[in-house]
Image 1 (cartoon, rainbow, N blue to C red):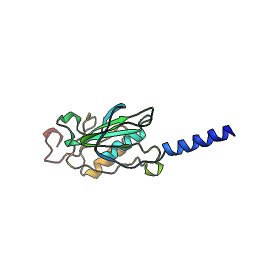
Image 2: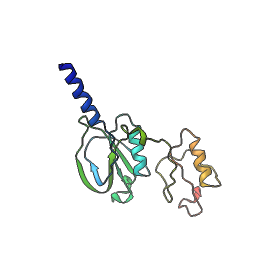
Image 3: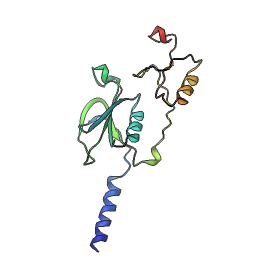
Image 4: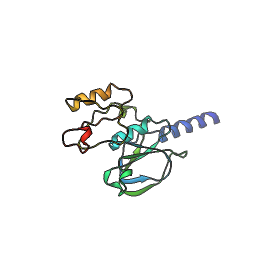
Length: 162
C-alpha cells in the first residue's frame, strides 16, 4: 500500500509540475539560471529555441528597445533551474516565458515569419542574388547551415550587400 501511495504522489506531482504553460510575461525577466544567450528575431522564435535546447525550461527575450546597450537587442537568454522555478523581476521591454517541452501541440519547427527592416546578427557565409524575399527564404530553408536570411533591397544600409 505504501508503494501505491508513493506512486500516486509521484504521478500527481509529475502531472502538475509538467503542465503546459503558454502564458508570456511582458516587462518581466526570469532572474538567474542562465545557460546560454543566442539571438532571435522574436519572442516566438526564442521560445522555439528554448524548447529545442535539452536543458532550457525558461527564457527571457530582450527586444530592440529593452536596453540602451544595442549589443543586447534581440537577445534570447535560455534558462534552467533544478527546482523548476525562478523568481520573476520587472524589466522594461523584456518578455519571458516557458519552454513548450510539455506542450507537444504547440511545437512547430517551421517558422515562416518574415521580419521587415531587421538584419540578424551573425556571419554572412553565403551571399547570392535573389529576385524576391520568397526565393531568398527558400534558399535558406534548403540550406542546412542557414538559420536566418537577410534580403537586402536598394535601401539597405550596406552598399556591398544591396
